[in-house]
Image 1 (cartoon, chains in turn green, red):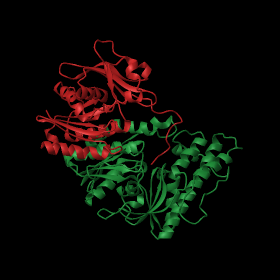
Image 2 (cartoon, rainbow over the protein chains, first blue to last red):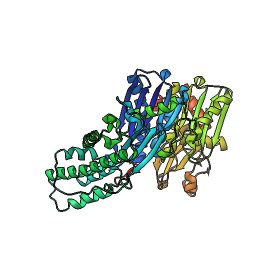
Image 3 (cartoon, one colour):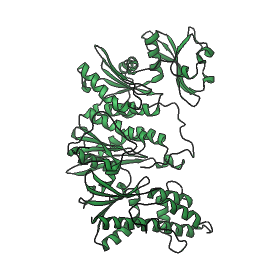
Image 4 (cartoon, rainbow over the protein chains, first blue to last red):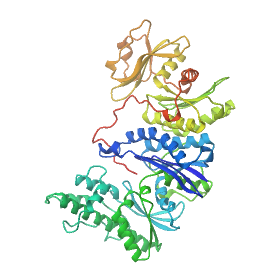
Length: 341
Length: 230
């Protein structure tokens, strides 16, 4: 089975073709980050407008790179939610209509399900069950994954998402928007001892996160500091260590509580090098296997949508011609293909 | 000539199919259901005509101005159908379609079409109908304040059509219009004449070139950005 995947839930237009035997055939991404940078955040109307312009050229490019003709496609998958409704509608309307015109089935994929399953595009791929740490600019959660469509949210953030905390702290340090990756880069030049930051909720039982206080602690902590380059790097280092301590600590706690000894990391913050380094080290010490998607599939992309959609299409699931996109869509309401809701 | 037309720019979601035997149409007015109803309505029209996408010569869509999200629904569905079926596309102005709708309803020859664009502004354009019964723009479409709206300097009576005249009830009299109908709202059927003529004249675009025309291009202000990142 060969499936075209389309992702337009936020500010990246992603398109890919995945084949159940040959794997990933081609993928392309257009990021709108620069478009939104001057506004300090994603402007939904601008995002939607850009998706409409970029989507078909990307489809054209990806089909050509995959060496695939539309006649060889067996289905189309598009992000059905959650996300920005105007942006989602662009991909859902175009994707569903492409499938309609091609006479193949289509499916609206849950964006977070696709993130959870993204590491399965890699080799070795994790087997079910596994624990997934999903950390991005919009989400921070620990999910127990028993199989396709069998998800239990073990914990999630009570306020800011992990990526959001990175971006906001980066802004405090004058690193622009979105500054998370720049903060991580700056931290490589830093070291310990400049200020002491809390590890929010790490000592408390449970698997929920809270990150907004960490940003505030940085703001208060740097008040009396001269913010030269070295100090900023040290502050970035301290902040990143605090984040990583919490994420690693809670992830391993989830492993311990469930007895599931496979850990999957997904979402944009999953690209953070320090997080990967620490998780791999700490998990290995406990005999826990850790799986990551390749760096480019941590952030939003079409490949994960094509892959998750293919799993559901193969199981016989398909969307009607009535196009649907949902801004909100609870991950736990998903079911395995074929199961009654 | 067989043309499928889609419009979701305003309150109604509509599909119309032009065939050698006439026009088949479906119209539904269900807020926020445009995406859900569009393809099933197109399926209905094709089935009733006994046609498939292979029998079509082009897809037409209301490319705006109108509701931003609505324009993108028709645009994206049109892109998908046209790319998937290898069909050329005719983007049609919704103001021109409103002039057609006004002529269909009232028989008017000169129509000033104006939609309420919110924020104290109008989308407006003026059309005169040619001998073939198609609208020819006399004043190009624009986003402007009601005070900036002027009647074309031509002979004959001008009539007003569209939601702009409901938002500004005194506008028709202030402009010296001979009459106006704020209830005129175009549907997909009103795109067909313009589209057929464009297809006959070779004035079509590719699926990827099928894009909305918003007229309002300033939509973001620094500091007014949303924060949501899925």
